Length: 552
Image (cartoon, rainbow, N blue to C red):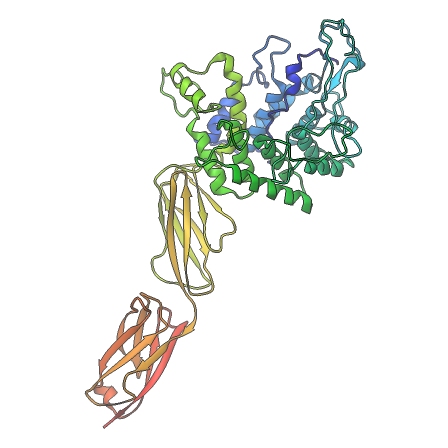
């Protein structure tokens, strides 16, 4: 069915978000910041669709509805709601993927209809995520339609209305191809998951939109232009880059080019993160906002960026409505996320402006998955073994004070990238095991939170031959002998035995040296050769010997 729609609704993919996880059915944890935002978004839906603020028949924002579904799927625990959205969206799929630019036409025809390739791609990706059938959804074969809008070079293109040529018609206006890198990213994902023969070309064209610095530009070059790849005039775009990463991450069996593109894009995101953890729409001259910061946190978290993603998520959490007091201007809005700091501060005084509620909805959809990455701001404890550990073994570290669903990041030797630890809500500290190096060393592990970092040093001892040296090679009964033990580590425990009898014990000094003094008496006084055995912290690993002779 052809529906006349306002042009503004055709731009629904311009600030879209994406999910990289399968539709989750695990129970929700309502206590976490991400789950609070997901719950608020769920409460904003009306019969499974997100309101637009316009009058019927344009009273639903279908693009934002899909964004909400992607967000809920990523947060997890909202499978029933995502299914509700899938069912509610299905009979309105035609309104989302096509519209008539000339809204004055009483009986528009096929030639008067604009069909959006980006909308087709996003809708197909959603249906795949939500467990629907992309070849039979709402009476449409979304896969075939998207393949039909994908050129030989992989570039997606809108189907333009042909009737917008009469300047005398009040509703007439030139039609425009709105396809861009956002829709291209969804197309690369959806076509690949569907096993389409168009998938490789769609991915290739998307990768051409990545600029040398690592970001993805939003707009394509003009059709027919000799250069279709990014050039030096293209503006950096945080949201587009994060979204491209998320779609590429969702592609199964990634080739080397795709993997390299993800790595380069996330490196660019890290390089543009601001000191307080936030992101702007562009690296400079743009306000820090939750759309960009939430998307970046989400993308970085898929690549093990625990600390960077965590700082971004923590920034978002600062302007999230959390447990508002009864009777306050924000009562009933728990979990809602403001676009920026100024909006949040104004809402604390006067509540959410009804005319700008859609801005809060959009910000919240992109912020919710990013909140999953947020680091705790609590003053946590961090502890590890104080005694020497055997090299090549493992050590247990403990973290206390992390609330349920809150996160901290652990880095250090033997940890590939960063390790994320999440609070369980139990009183006992979080425990984690780390592999220790196979050599004598001091391994420093760093725990990062939203407010700073703490370190724990673990000392390891490897196998070695200790050097034992006696002061007197021959000695008489009743005299004092001195044994100097070196090649120890500072603070290492030492035991000295002569003839099987312990004659001294202690710890090595700051230079790794221990001196033992003992008198030659009793059994030691019997004339003959005496063997000195010295043992370090681990006697099977660290030992040495020397000899002297007792004479009459």
